[in-house]
Image (cartoon, rainbow, N blue to C red):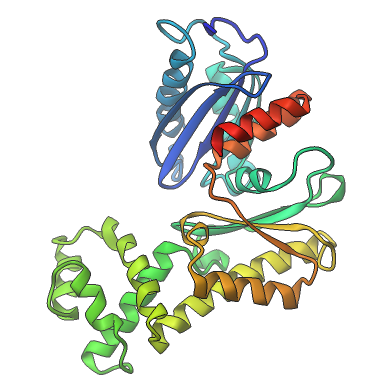
Amino acid sequence: MGVTRADGALLAVDAGNSKTDVALVGPDGAVLGAARGGGFQPQGGNVRSAVDGLAELVERAVAGAGAGGPGPLPYAARVQACLANCDLPVEEERLAAEITARGWGRTVAVANDTFALLRAGLPDGGEPVGVAVVCGAGINCSGLGPGGRTARFPALGRFSGDRGGGTDLAEEALWWAARAADGRGGPTALADALPAHFGLDGMPALIEALHLGAVAAARRHELVPVLFAVAAAGDAVARGIVARQADEVVTMAAVALGRLGLLGARVPVVLGGGVLAARHPLLHERVAALLARRAPGAVPVVVTAPPVLGAALLALDRAGAPAAAYARLRAHYA
């Protein structure tokens, strides 16, 4: 198919903190073109330049669907963009206005990227109802209830009440390891394991390397698997960090379910993002056990498919697509 007009094609965008996926999808659920790029960071009023980054990926995805260039605008009948760092209504409005101005599709819908994860984990057909918790670099939660009601959290950092995600887990592990090394805290195997990951001989060397940039701050995320390995080996401090993460995941899910009147209902609780999708036994088993206590009807569903699947499913929902289109799209990302 050469994409030269918006003849029913759907443009799905999932833009996370660390990576962005764009897919052009036919009305029959076929993925016609796709592109992947870096994270989406529109904070600080940088909306236009952030969407400029999306534009390059959109053009690549559309060009991949046909011969030659991407063709004239609009590329698609509908655009569904699920975006990280789109947490407040005013941010949704600004991003929707900027994307609409690009002319990629006849209609544009913008939502936080947690709704892509949620939709990917919900069954097709019928009213979408459930809650999703994403735990990747950060943590966030969203929910859909009967009648289209939603539950959200600001997810803007510690000052908005957030705790958890890979960034926080790495920071917490470093905090406990540093205090163990200098005597301010109790012993933990993290004090040896974290510097060893970078080939260093102790926490003082790692602290210096992080402070002076010999180990880039962006590499701190590498410490999360180390934390889980130390916890799995039985270290009490590491296990405590993992337990607190599980507690926070379940707290967010339970509060969202309660807001939607679903705390006792049999509904999916979709879990995704790099930390939860890895299904670390200590974390996953504690999340499942706590959910069973706080929301007995909740059914944990781990999603490992790219969240752009959820954005594309939302676009199919709005297009009134047939059941076969959903099956075809899900098969592509299976």
